[in-house]
Amino acid sequence: MTTVLLADRDGRALGPLAEKTVPALLPVRGAPILERALEALVSAGIRSALVVVGPRGPEIERRFGKGIGWGIALEYVRREEEETTGAVLRRLEHRLDGDTLVLRGDTAVEEAFGEFVRRLPGRPEPVVAAVASDRLLGLWRIRPEALKKVELPRDPADADWVRGRDWAALDVGLDVEPLDGLPRWKAFDRGDGTPAVSPRAAVAGGAKLAGGTTVAEEAVVAAKAALDGVSVLPRTVVPEGVALSGVAVAQNLVVDPAGSGTSLLTDLLPPPGAPRGDGIGSRLAGLALFLLTLPATARRRGPGGKSTPSGSRRRFPSSATCPSSSRSSGEASPSPGSPRSRRRRRRPRRSRGWRRAARRPSGSSPAPG
Image (cartoon, rainbow, N blue to C red):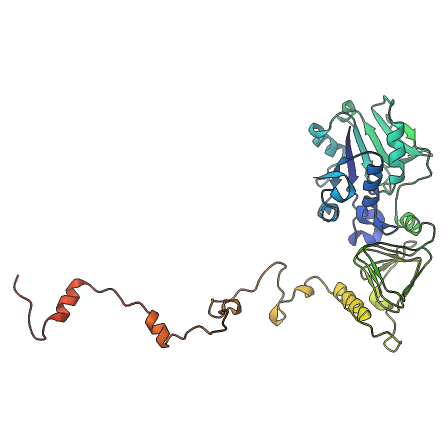
């Protein structure tokens, strides 16, 4: 059996957060959804998978690599623009060995992975779909003969997220629902109401976390920040003294999951006259927030204020004016008129006839031929 893990949702269901994060990397209780799916696969005894990614697939590949850190071998497959899930499976048909286990890894239903795999043996139907109280979960087992015509939905928020007419339902017996929008994600992330902080996050000692606040990886919460039921997404800095409640923060964007309203984190900073600590951690957090608010082009300004493309280097007219061409001793290059420059100048080559003429006394004429 071959396992295909789908991580190619386009993020429309995430509203304003769609531009800030890929659905597969959206954190739940401080960890990306896809990471939780990989751990569930390993727990179910699955050690390899083909991961189908969308246009932002490189972000997922950078995060999980080959899967070595999770005890599973991952290989990535790019879904082309306008290509359906069924078309991707048919393109991979030569790599599918026997039955195919197709699981959505970006809908937060990893809790059902193990139970679905456990209940599959003995089911002869061409397509078996996992359900929970008649709700489609995004888990399928497909026989080789069914690959030619099968089509699978991609997003639980779409109208086509329904069980196919020819699919056999397999109830996993769990109370689980797929993530279909920001309100449900916020409920998942809040969990039982206790704060959750990623091991790769930094929270200052004076910060207050309450009401199920979660801090994802590579996020920073400075001292005196007060967060109640807040989801802090990756690469976000919450400055000192900021008070937030019931929102999601992605870099400088603050989103209300209930109504999808947005604001800027920089607009919520304490007034200048408010007392603030002067510790080095607070100053670094403020600097990091300032850098995050800059547009991408402003962060790549070259000398003189000119914009420098990412990855480019300054070009100098010649090695004589290039700062990197100076000698290790600090010596300047010789000027054209210096003695050392004259010694190095090569003399022009002269013919033999010119040298014979130079030896003759002045006024003499050459001998007749």
